[in-house]
Length: 345
Image 1: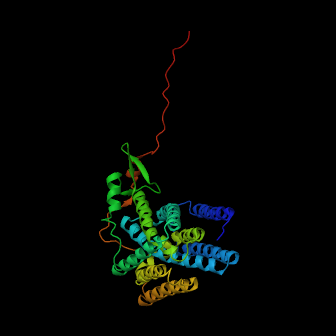
Image 2: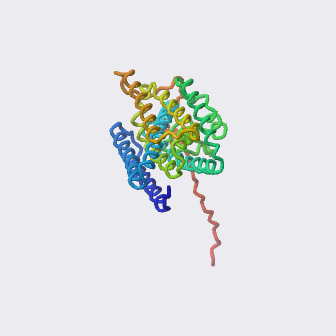
C-alpha cells in the first residue's frame, strides 16, 4: 500500500480539527446528556466509516476490508475500556460535569501512546517476522484469561498505580473545579482529578497492549493500523457517556471480546499454513460482537439505566467555600523589589 505523505498529514489534520471542535463545544464544564452523547457518537462513527469508504474506493476492496476489520476490533475492545473508566469515575465520585475534560486529555494521550506502540510493532514485524507468532500466543493467553476473569472488575482501591501516585504526589480529597493541581499552605498538591487522569492513561496503555497486537492480526499496513485505531479511539468519550450507565446490561460482552482475541490469535498462528480471507475475519468478528451484545440485552430485558457504584469508595467531594479560599494561586507572580533612591537636592 503506497500512501502519499500528504494523506498522512491530511488525516492528522482532520483529527486535530475534530479534537479542536470537540474541545470548543465542551469548553465549559457541563453534564453530557445521553442525547448529546448519541449525537457525537454518530459523528465519530460516521467519520470512521466514511474514511473506510474512501480507502475502499481509492485502494480497493481488500484494503477497505482490512480497515473495517481493524476498526471493528479496536471499537469493540474499546468498550471494555469504557467500562473500566466508569468504575474509576465511580470510585472517585467524579462530578459528571468534570468527566469530559479528563476523557479529552485521556484520549489525546492514548493517541500519542498508541502511535508509539504501532511504530514499535511495525519495526518489530519488519525485522523479526516471527514476532507475529509471539503476538498470536499473547492474544490466545489474554483471551483465555478474560474468559476466566470475565466476572471480575478493576479494584481501584488496591491499584498499584493509585498507591504509587499517592506516594509520589500529595493529594487532596476535594475537587477544585477543573483544576488538576492546586497550591495549599505553600505546597503544590494534586486534586482527585489528576489521579483519575493518570489511571485513565495507564489503563489505556494496558489495553493497548492487547488491542495493538490484535489489529496486526488482520493487517500489517501501518497506515491502516494507525487510522483504524485513531478513528476508533476518537469516539470513546461520547461512547462513555452513552454506555456507562448501561454497563450492568452487557453481561456477555467481555466473553465476546475474549473470543475475538482468540479468533485473531488463531488467524495469526495460521498465517504460514492458510491465510484466512479478510472478509471472513471481518464477518466472524462482527458475528461474535453482535451475538454477545444481543444475548446481553435479551438477558437483561427490563433493566433501566443507572450509574455505576463502587462499595466503600472514599469520600471525595467538591471543595467547600473555605477550601476554595485556602487554595493559593498555582503560579505565583514574582514581585519586583523597588529600591528607593535618595532624593536629589
